[in-house]
Image (cartoon, rainbow, N blue to C red; front, side, top):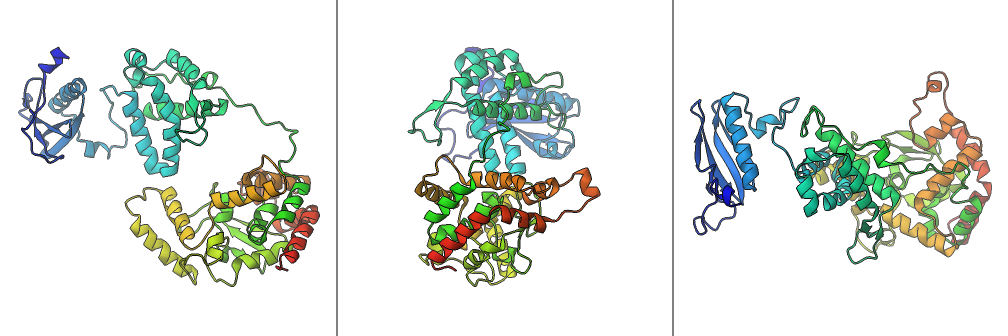
Length: 482
C-alpha cells in the first residue's frame, strides 16, 4: 500500500465541509488534473469516499465514478485518458443508449458483477424476483469473498472449473435457516437449494458474457455446466394424489362458515392460490356458470402464464360463491375475516371504473417504485388488500387450520391444485381441455384442427366429485348457508 500512496492522495481531514455530498479535490497518479495529447483535461475529485473523473469531451460535460479503491480508480482513469485520446470514450449516460455494450477492459469483482445483474433484473422482473435472486447469490458471495478465495480469484473473469467444484462442496455444507431468520434453527442447505443457487449463478455469468452486456470478455468460458450443477430427481409417476376426495370430505366437515365459502373454489377447481386471491366480483359469470380469469387493466394484473381463460365451476357451489359476493357490485371476491366481520373500514368501489380510478391513484403514489409490469401487479394486489381482500398467506393459513382439524397432515394450499389436476385426469378429461382448465397454454398442433369444450369437461369432473360436492352442500346447510 505504501507504493500506491505515492499515486493516490485523498483530501486531508478538515479540508471539506460537513456536508456528506460535498465534492473535493483529490489526486490520482500524482496529479489532480490530467491532460491528454488532444488537449482535453480530466480532473479528479472525491465525494463520499469515491473518486470521480470530471471533464469535457466532444463539447459535452461528463462525470464518471472511478470507485473507492485507489488501485481500481487509477486503472480506470488511465483507460479514460486512452479512450479520449483515441476518440472512443462515451460517458456512462451515453453508454446506456448503445444497442451493443462496449467491451469492458477493466476487470470487475464478482460483487460488482452480481450487483449489476441484480439491478437489471430489478428493472425487468420486479422486486420479488430480485430478492429471490439476491438470497440465492448471497451464498456464492459468502464463499467467493473468503480471504483465500479472494487471493486466488480476485476478479470475476478468474472463475474457472476448480472454483465451481469447490463452491459446490461449500454449498452442500452451508448452514441456512428455513424461514430466513438469524435466530432460527439452522440446517444444511437442501440439494434443491444448492441447485437453485448454482443455476442462478450460471444465469448471472451468462448475462455478463452476453455480447449486449459484455461484463466478461468474449473468450471467457462459463464453467457452470449441467454436470457441475446437477439435477433434481424426477417425480415418481406412481405417486398418489396429495389430497384424496375422502380427505377433502373430512376437511369440509370440520370447516367453519368463512372457510367453506372462501376455500370452496380451491377445493374443486385447479386454481393457483395467486389466481384465487386475485378474483374480482365482476369475474363471476353466474349466467354461464364460469369464472373469467386472466389479465386486466392493460396487463397490470395477470396470471402466472399470462393466460386468459374461462373456468367453469360446479353449479353445486354457486350458493357459496353468492355468499362471497354478498350483494356487492365490485371488489375482491374473497375477503379476509376482519373485513367480512366489519372490524375495519375497507375502501369501497361500486363499479369497474371506480376500481380503475383507485388503481391509477395507487400507481401515482407508488410511481417511484414501479419499474416493470410485475411491480404494477404488486400495486394492484395491495389495492385489493385495502378493499378487504384476503392474502395468499391468509388463505393458506386457513387451509392449514382446516387440514389440522381433520387430521390431514403434510398438505399445503398448493396441493389442492395438484389434487384437482389429478382428479381431472382421472375423470377422463381430454388433454387439451386439461391444459386449458389448469391455465396452461394450448398451443398444440391439435388445437389447429379441433376445438375444446371446457364446460362439458367440468360437468364430467363434477360427476367425479359427487361425494365432495354433497359434503359441501350438507355442511353449508348445517352452517345456515343453504
